[in-house]
Length: 293
Image 1: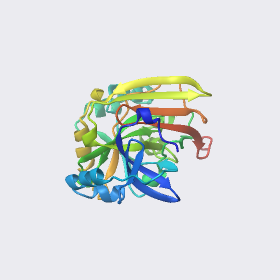
Image 2: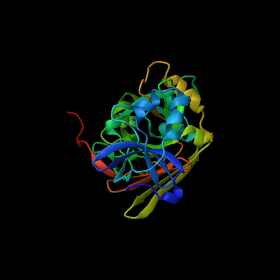
Image 3: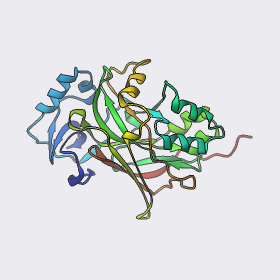
Image 4: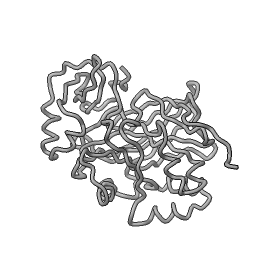
C-alpha cells in the first residue's frame, strides 16, 4: 500500500482507496480504515454540520486498502491561485519576458485564479507527475489545497503539486493554460484532513531527489501568504458554482532557482506539517516539437 509513513500521518483523515477491486471513500483513524458510505462529492454537498457528523460517525474499520488513490472524485475540479507569496512573485518576474503583470496582481484586490485539472486527471500518491516534452524548464509547485464544500466553506486540507512549465509561462502570459494544464500536471494527496482537526499556519517543505540524491530542498509557511485562505475561496465562488465542491490550491512559496528543471525519473516530495506528505515520480508527457515555420 502506497501510503505515507504512519508515524508522520495525521491521526484522522479521509482517504480514497482501492480495496478488493472496489474504490471507496474511507475515514482513516490510525491504521484503521472505515467506510464513509458516500463519495466526497456527496459529502461536500451536505451542510457543514452534517458533513462533519458523517465523518465522525464512520467507525468500525473493515477496509484493507490495496492502494491509496488521489483524494478527489473524477468529475470534481481543481483550481489554483497564483502569485500569492512574495517568492512566487519574484520567480514569475524572473522567468517572464515582461514581469509587470505579476507585480501588479500580487498587490491587486482581485487574485489570479485559474483552472488546473479535473479529478480524473489528478495524480495520487506514488504516481508520476508530468513535465512537458516541449518545455525545457519545468518545476513542481508545493501548495496547500483547500477542500471547499458546495457553499464555498472550508471542509478540509490536502497537499498538492501544481506542476508547471516556467519556460512556456515566461514566454507569454497568454500561454498560462498550456504552462499549467496538461497531462499529469496536478498531484494531490495522500489524504484530506478535516478542517476542524488542523489549524494554520502550515509549514510546507519540498524535496526533489535524482538517482537517490537530494538535488533541491526548500520550505515556506502559509503565514507568508499575501492573502487570507478565506479570501481566496470567496473570490473563486464569486463567479462560479461548485455543487460537488472543489479543491483550491493556494499558491507556492517555494520556487527552485532558475538553473533547475525537473527531469523524468526525479522524485518529488511535498510535505505539509499536519496535513500529509505527497510523494510522486516524474515522467515526460506530450509531444516534443520545434518552432513553428
